Amino acid sequence: MENMALLLSMGYEPIKVISWQRAITLMLGEKVEVLEVYDRQIHSPSLTLNIPAVVRLNRKVKRRPQRVKFSRHNLFFRDNYTCQYCHHTFPSHQLTCDHIIPKSQGGLTSWTNVVTSCSACNRKKGNKPLQAVNFKLLRLPMEPSWLPTLHLALQMERAPGLWRSYLHSG
Image (cartoon, rainbow, N blue to C red; front, side, top):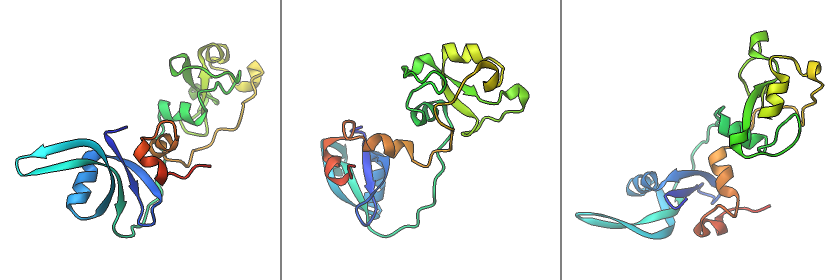
């Protein structure tokens, strides 16, 4: 994560994680204040800069609500790498995405119709509805409201040390 920078609002609230290159662009455009830097530097013929670790916006910006992109990774993250049928947790390479209402029966690929499934449960369910195989969902699938990049970064054990005092725990 040391190639990333934590972007804070004017009020010091975490907004998102950006690349250090983007942070430098914002800094040179005087759009952010650099609060913390990594030990690494970049050099140009006329300039040496420390790589920004934490930056704060200089002005208030309206934030548009962002939707979480539907992807295999984000689905597994939403479901906590847990099969929604047998309720066991697996590494990602042992997981699949399963349509609750099969595509062949008009089911859509959407946050509310796709869940994390282990390979064994996915094979057992096949192209059948849940009731046909006596499966009960661990929880109803919903579209997540978090931003995965920031959510991952906010896990204290994964966050760079320079970010920790800016992250709200609990």
